[in-house]
Image (cartoon, rainbow, N blue to C red; front, side, top):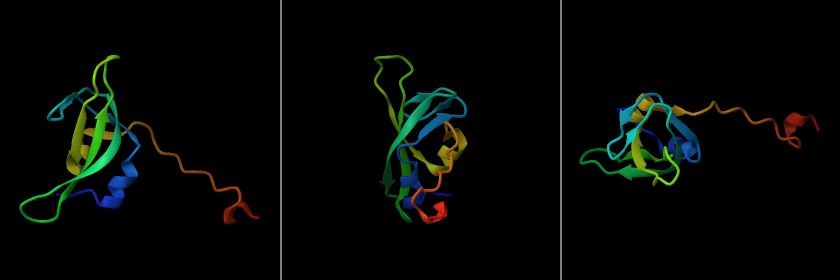
Length: 102
């Protein structure tokens, strides 16, 4: 089973994700197109092998005043049910950097 590496998981922190479809996220039901923010990484120890890293996703409440839920998502589940809410654009070259042709 494919897992997040620590470096890969850290790159997701602060990103907005969206549900591809309705799904039961364990402690919470997530509706299709519901969004959330990756707020951290958690390692879960297993009886055998290295820890499994999960992304910690805070779901955006559907109604104002509702309490947001937090879910822990391993990579296979993430790939099945979640994706970035918008594509990440490449950053423009730094104006003072070597690509600027100083």
